[in-house]
Amino acid sequence: MVVPATMRVGTFGTFYTLINNNKLSGWTVQASEDNVDTVLPCIVINPAQFKNKNITMNGGTKERNMEITIQLFTDVRDGLTKLDAGADNVENSINSNQATLHSANLMYDGCEDTAQNTYTEGQQKINYRAISFKLRLN
Image 1: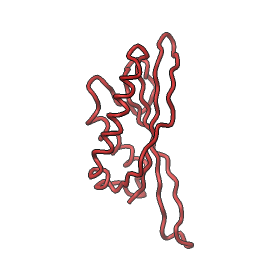
Image 2: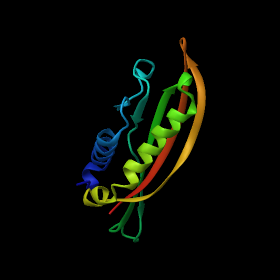
Image 3: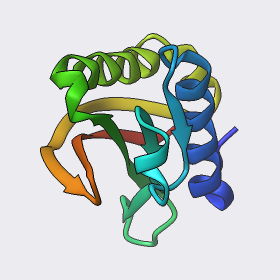
């Protein structure tokens, strides 16, 4: 269960487990993009970012909002279809596991694509997409 004392670790762990357990065949899940060019297609789960807001004047009640960005990388030769399929799979993995999120003390507020690009790294052309998921600590 995600609690204020372990918000970052708990949120990351919950997302990693959901995405890794439901990923498409052939995809890998990583916690950093250090070796993206050697493991395409891959999903990178970034650390959760938090924004705490006091609701009461004495700070006794807080609203804890968070955002976690998932990046997807595919070989440009696979076209955008593989990138789209991976993005749909990640989004569906989160959307269809609301009970798991709720039992982890996380409330899902939605997601949005935040970037899409094609770039060259070394000799490899890569398609890239980022999806940001917004959550609240229950």
